[in-house]
Length: 344
Ligand code: TLP
Image (tube, rainbow, N blue to C red; front, side, top):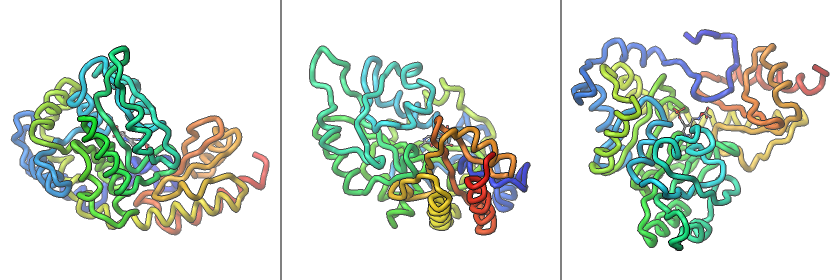
């Protein structure tokens, strides 16, 4: 049961509470000490993610921030640059950790609708001894910044070709890669295929309460294991969390198309209510609306039981997830419609 069942909480897909099946699995999970790699449920989850994504190995961690940052540390050395799309979570929302932990800095390439151009990535690779060498290329699919936008498979493969030409590793921040797979109508393995490492979040659209998994080669995962410990992410009887993650992995993907349809419906309602939304960017479960005095508007909605995130002075983000059913979405649409027609 959510702590606030009356709220329509569209701040993020991270706000979901575990399903009854997850809670049951958590209660019944067989556990051991995962720092000694002795938790059978964690081991099963890691094997399952590695299998589904098509990698040799995988490692369970508490958060997507940790899987991304452990991967960055595993791929780079101090003083290097990471090429990533403008607005990438690894820089924008991970508190400077790439610099603080790995000693690397971002080099952004433009990404209209969240999709970087392989030619611009190639051009961004450093070639002079007077510049910080490029250590990694990192993509985000879906891209959180504009509306859960999807990088098509051919673009990801073209970027992998650039990475290979340049001898650079390619990482995927796949916090919402299951949403990308659902939108593209392909498997998780297809989305993961071009990358050396992939970070998959179980606690976003897939609905688990906690956890992300980093997948990669045995060598990369061995390195990441050390960085996970340095970051304080060595958990003990973490099987109680992995048990929920396994169910998220099994049952989460099938629900995502419905989340995407509801996001679209909400975006259309926002437009009808007079707000600006780039519908082209609403490809999965995230909607950004341009709303003047965003925080004030969000506060008015919050008082009516609709929660969204003011991410800028004039930008509000709404994220659909499995706890938002059709009835709740209708209520959200009702609040949004009235909201713009009365002065608050
Ligand atoms: N994103 C959160 C906030 O940090 C903004 C959200 O509500 O969307 N990669 C991407 C693309 C993400 O969106 C997030 C979380 C992460 C990584 C980090 O995951 P956590 O929160 O588990 O550290």
